[in-house]
Image 1 (tube, rainbow, N blue to C red):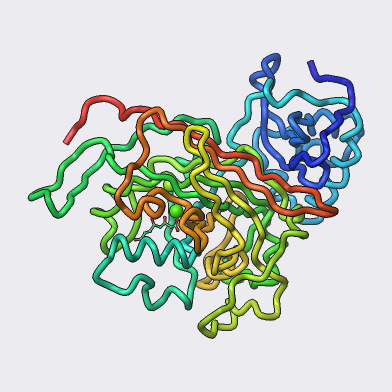
Image 2 (cartoon, rainbow, N blue to C red; image 1 turned 60 degrees about the horizontal axis):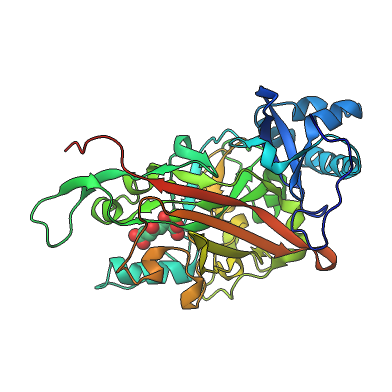
Length: 394
Ligand SMILES: O=C(O)/C=C/C(=O)CC(=O)CC(=O)O
Ligand SMILES: [Ca+2]
Ligand SMILES: [Mg+2]
């Protein structure tokens, strides 16, 4: 049963009234009734129940098994619902976070993964292509990306089965098949598209807020041995498509207004559709923490990303491609300039490993500065590696 007392949060709780991320949850007494919830401290506001009780015009958008109807409703509705939710925080309709089951919060349309950290791209280029320039000639002119696999995006807490595949190191005469022996993480930040765009209407830098609903943490699990053998010349494929974990909580873009920051200085002139010199600062000062089995292994700074999410969206649509509600794009691995700011084990260990072992649990958390000293928390993304399934089939 929902608790009928208003919730008191401790000072500095990163999930206070300035944060208010959306998710989809069920309760043990109604396991077949997924609906939209809002995280407040360690509680979940049943937004569907609160909206119905208040006679909200948006009640039907919130009594849904995914966020997609709310995503599709557009920015004026997102802003109206967020204001209404603030008014419901002192009322009933809360469940303890530990007592609900959280679902994948939105139905993913297409999934794109970028490569926007200059530090990551330089480090990986050095490790994967030691004989060439670390950054390819196009890197400073466009945000490089690839299309990922939307159907294998899973919610935080889902176990990740060790993938199997082909690999071939220089020491192997022929390819070998088996469970990946270089399973890695990639700490990333994802952006969820709400408002669609028809074909042949590129989304300019200044229209970013009209289309992007919110932000979440992403772990783009990567099998480096499978990847290193398969990726030439078309890019990542089975080395990354087995699973991508996302947080159960999507935080509205507006929650990051106080964390906006200018991206690093541009070293190359940009074509007009990517030139953000006169746009609002496109960086976000999000501080990520990567923990493996409870131990902090890295603190990647999202503010260091060279390409911004607005530039990525502009680039994704500049060729005439349309946008759908539920389209999802991730930043690429977040790495900063310092050795302890690298967002994957490939970089953290200079390509030598160790990589993930069966049973390892990886958790990403993050926060950004908010209004009046508040912290804006991003919901965690966590996942545990379980052994490869079945027999090894060549
Ligand atoms: O440089 C490469 O060949 C590939 C690098 C990656 O694994 C990149 C990737 O998934 C994009 C990113 O997370 O930055
Ligand atoms: Ca990635
Ligand atoms: Mg992936």
